Image (cartoon, rainbow, N blue to C red; front, side, top):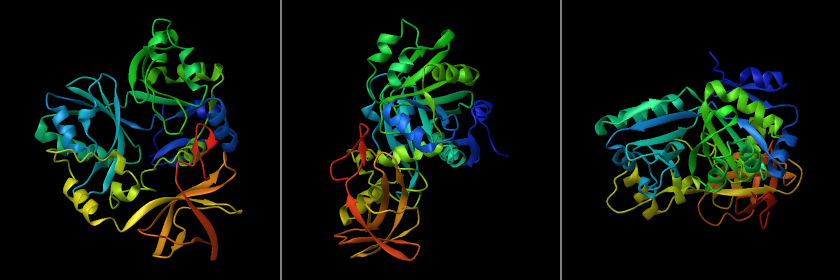
Length: 366
């Protein structure tokens, strides 16, 4: 049975092309994926991300529990509303999921996890939480709309209650706060996102989602589907769970070492394996590649290197760059000249540092 967000009928009324995405009926585009991509890079676009799973954690030992559960250090969160990006690992150091956690009180933290991994994430979190007497509460009553782009914040701020606007305008990156939207609707506004652009991800009671979507539409925010979301996040150098990392890939192998805190005295799940990998050096690494000639880079294509074969992970045409880009996982060491097998033809690609795009413009060397 395919699940639907509260905005499903709204997407269909706007002429969205719908697809099955991890068991959810979601819009891939509303006509032109390229136009939606450019709208986010140049102005403001919005995405229905209500399929994401919101999980509230309550209990006196919640911080202690998160010290154990997450590879990043929850003790970085000391200010109300501050958010942290982290991987949640298995005992082998593989990534069960990547997530965002918000600090809302010493006994109250909020997680936002991926939709496709909902069932296994909840089962894992609940099992680990038992030893800490932490209450795990899924919040299906929330909808979530991401508004992204250089004009996104201004357009959202224009819809907020006068008393809240100055405070939300000053909100730092990776911080969230409560505010009142149109007609006094309660919003949880986070300055986070998955596009490489500034903006907000807004959680709100599902019964208000259609009214907020329509208010954003009236403010000139363009609806965007999963297609544009994917090309935007790839240009911005952001991993997609299941494509760029999974339970058999460690953060070191997914270029997510920056999210691992090997702080003294904290025994998080998977730590021992990560320490061994770091000491020995990993056998495979994740890199960025660019195809300068015509062609498309796709997940699963073989990458030929001087050290042996690798594979393309996330790959797509990049509208901002007008060329194909990808992440690839290849054997560690000097790769030499890189080639990709595209339908039996070996095509030369360039290794580059990513992100590929920052602030709407190509990064150096791309």
